[in-house]
Image 1 (cartoon, protein in one colour):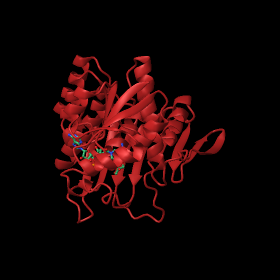
Image 2: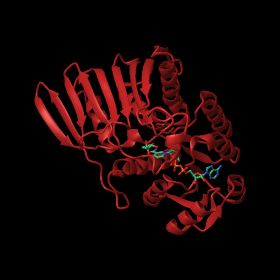
Image 3: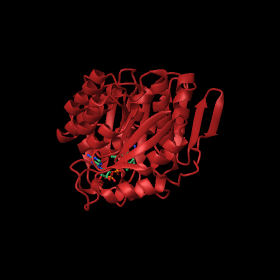
Length: 341
Ligand code: NAD
Ligand code: 89Y
């Protein structure tokens, strides 16, 4: 049994805790949050007796195999470095860092300590996205040459996560990071990116719309577009939609988790709806299922001594896309060459 502690008992952590209860071979035995009310609420809800308001105290006092860091980005580097110093394996929520140097420092800290570091980059673990990737890998549409990964919504994300309305950066760093990671997952790393951003909602501080174009090493050109200002007749939050054109056909992941594949043999439509886990609630069930999937993957990796798909090192490529997208948007959509890949 791998013993873990959750650090950060905020809005999203409840999903981590429910998922941990379902992951075989893992147990959360201690909790930490500097806010005593949130700490107590989570401890009571999930029946965890050992609680701390200071992460250093937690790491000094507990015998742990791993920590699961579910705080916002500002505290990731100090907490990852602290955990690495105690030689425990680490999961860190996205955005892993808001500067490349912090991402690199966390990777170095984990490598020097000989511990596994996985970024909780869960969107690629959604079953609809895995189903689309499996079709591409099977060659169902031949060789992909063009793609679009799209997330457009007007869902109120600000009530649950008020910092999204006030931070200096919004949609690329918060949501686009997942959508860019899906583009990497499907089409591989990119040579270049260009981006344009816009703020439509006057009540928030930063951009709520972003349109990015990537040229991938695989030869695919992709468009990655995100919006929290799109009032659609059918709200599809939090679905990521896909369009991929290949040499032999096309793939579309449409609202309602409908995967449509078309090639010379005909057209197939598959229902790739996520399972509704016992603790999940629509419309978040898609994200909640992926939280379970990625946490189970982490434990599988610890047991097999293998690197997680979204290791810190892997995630540096996604972070580089985020940084380059902001740079491009600030410079009239200049095309930025990427060098991490
Ligand atoms: P939140 O502000 O609601 O919760 C963060 C909690 O961490 C707070 O309770 C705070 O007191 C605690 N905290 C902060 N620093 C701490 C420290 N040094 N020691 C102990 N506790 C500390 O934030 P949230 O909305 O739950 O988001 C947390 C992270 O999860 C963010 O990075 C966000 O982007 C990410 N998130 C991911 C997904 C996803 O699908 N992967 C979805 C939503 C949010
Ligand atoms: O924080 C974001 C995330 O990671 O998934 C959706 C979200 O909660 C709001 O954009």
